Image 1 (tube, one colour):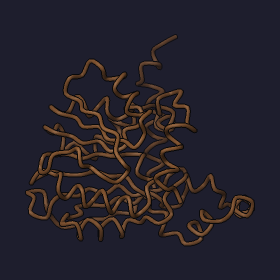
Image 2 (cartoon, helix red, strand yellow; image 1 turned 90 degrees about the vertical axis):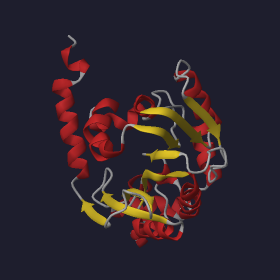
Image 3 (cartoon, helix red, strand yellow; image 1 turned 120 degrees about the vertical axis):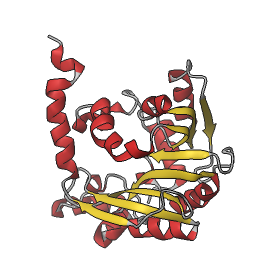
Length: 268
């Protein structure tokens, strides 16, 4: 299980951030292709937004797009290293606020002020208690018609995988021989599921609009992208859920397009 302290150590100390996190978009053909080809089509109904909150921005891989879609962008991360990097990267932007938090609180954000909250490829490492706490906080911070998009773990639906994630290292390494290595878990939170997200949102006074459960560099559906709003919001509508086992095909297709249409394709 990835605790808050383990996450702080990982992103403050262990990880070098040599490519600012852009390396995680390589299988999409780059950050631009992933944003414009994969993320924005899922988010375009809610952007631009006056005030955007991004939780766990890392070195600003997605912040660079969110800043151009907002009048005010709030970046919150448990990693001091990440927040300092974002301050340096976006030093010329006057509409961005930066905060280091405890990993569960949003005390620095004004109540009823956030029009759109976003987190992608970060909270997949957050266990259920963290997600539950953030949803409770967001029930207060979202504007009356605010919307949230959070990418989180669904690993908890795979009991064998969650069992392996809790094994001592030496025993865990043996699992690779049956195709269940620690690498295949992608450091996903073992306690989190799509169903828990729905229930936590409901208990916090939020309504889950949709959930897209996807595979991630594996055939197993270990991730979920959840969209939610307040129960009284103009966006509130019937809940929809899909199992998208072809999510990785989408990434592969975008990567093939990037070979034709990215700036690098025209350089000799």
